Length: 589
Image (tube, rainbow, N blue to C red; front, side, top):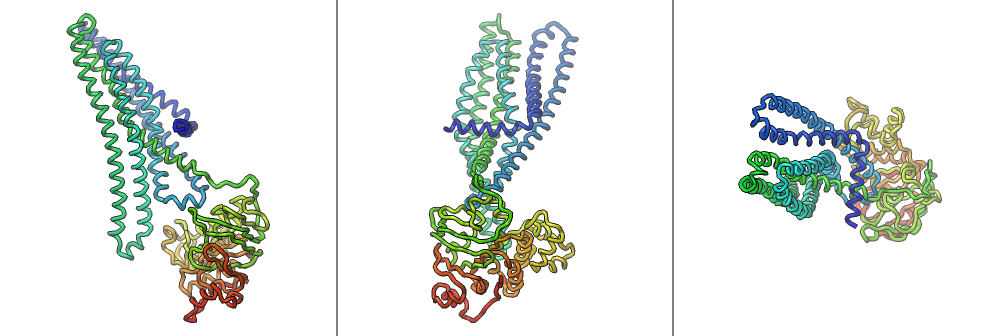
């Protein structure tokens, strides 16, 4: 099973070479020429020592030296192509993998991001894929050069002394045995170090994003301590990886060093006891040429760490690529625009074996406003997330205009659903770019109109660069109310038929809340609207209020009906209004 998986992984890796066949072929040709040229020096040296110098053939020595100099210039050209075009090929493969990974991440469900930290994903997108690109470039040429040089060197050594060559070759299995024994430990160690780099990135991303909170609470030392835990974890993991690498490298270097001793000892004995077939010139030539055999093995030693990093990186890349993406059912069809009637039919849903919603049944007529209220953790937001299929309904169904959302494509469903949340996410960029996110093809007039309806246009125009003003990372330059109004403008531009307001005003002061409620009141007119709120004042005029408690519907009705019922809603209402304070209302009628 494992062997089959490794073959599949290898095929996926090789597939990224296909667009670069020409570059790859030339890279291999250059590697071949580079390797062949490396064989010429000891061969020519043997010829000069054995024939030209004893014969006083100065002309031949000069000619051979000139030829050797010319081939070294050729070798330099081959080396330039390998290092330049080979690396460019690796970078292009890396870019393709990164593009594929980003595209796949965009298709993964909400549940994936619930269980994976941003820093870990960033590590796989950058560090891991860099190691993969280095393997993509150096791997084939190193393996090719190593194999070719090892075989060629052995054949050439046999021409000098096949007996001595066989003695040297007998030690090769020892090297292979050490490499095989070390591989398992090295793979596990390098994988662990990759995970620790991801932990560092996750901690760093989290700490930098929350730097203002850190400063506000004067907790810099605490954040430093948290970071050091991950940093020390990386040091330990990397130390184990290098321990495995050191044991492997030192063992192999010891064996290769022993080669020189064996050559000197055995060659000296051959010179004494078999001088007719092996003399000191052969011994010198053999000792010069033994490096041709040892050098590829040393290259393999240096390459092995890169091989482990690259293989580990590609496995981590493939883990994400193998994560199932969101898919439409075969029966799913595009819907241009909804009327907006929503029916929850026996909907049951849970996270990690914990039931959040239990047999929920709600019918929301088109164009009406329904409010979900109740204690935190009761399932209100989860219910909203099921409408645009952020999570799949486990049991039961949700119908829109009588059609199951399972039979509607994700794209067309989400194009018809607008969401305004308490925690607004804005992209780094300008006001224009963030508003236009509601409709990428919107005209300037449509963007301005959306901003006006969200009561943010006047503020934007008071700025020097107007709509071209940068809002900072995640809108850091804006107040909470300005962020909220900007997100509302985005939804105005989207013009959905179904609107979800999830605690849209709960974090705002009363003055700002009133301003935003006016925008929300206009936004929800003519749309089916679901409002999730803790402040009951914001949902008082809803067509119906649903009280959800521990995943079940406990009460439903209008505000007055629920007050008269004297149940959970009445208790929530009395708790919030015990001081007689009433905030503004959202009027969607």
